[in-house]
Image (cartoon, rainbow, N blue to C red; front, top):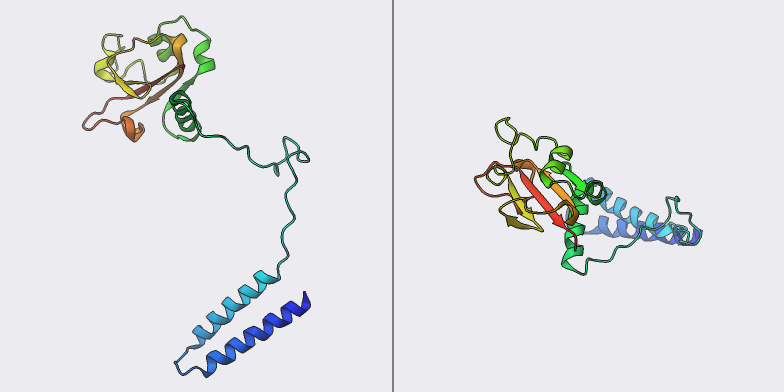
Length: 190
């Protein structure tokens, strides 16, 4: 190890001597920059490799050194939709979400009642009055499995997830130009 360091120091000195004899004009900053670069290379070469991480069998389930679990890409459209919903639910600062376990608590309730119970601001969408089921399509952009829909003709028992966004916070894919209505995304079970 010490011999390697001596060899690197010797190489750095030779490089600096060569640069000083060069016919091109060099400033002190240029020389220091080259010396720093060569020194960094020498330090990197002298570092010993890090200890390997413990194997998954040795690391406990709560151990921070355990490798991250690898997820396979979605293989069907239903899995892809589910992954899209879960990604936004976990990473989005905007929007409100109703998950499958929450929907399963009252599978026979009318969808409008479930939405009013779980989503802030859903009751009075536009002008503060309580919205009836007939008014929903005119005051809300509704998407079922990513496709635009005309109404709420979906049973709660058939849903695996719900997303609700104010117009300005909706994912770009579901924003319509020149509209300022909230967006409701309904995801059906496969």
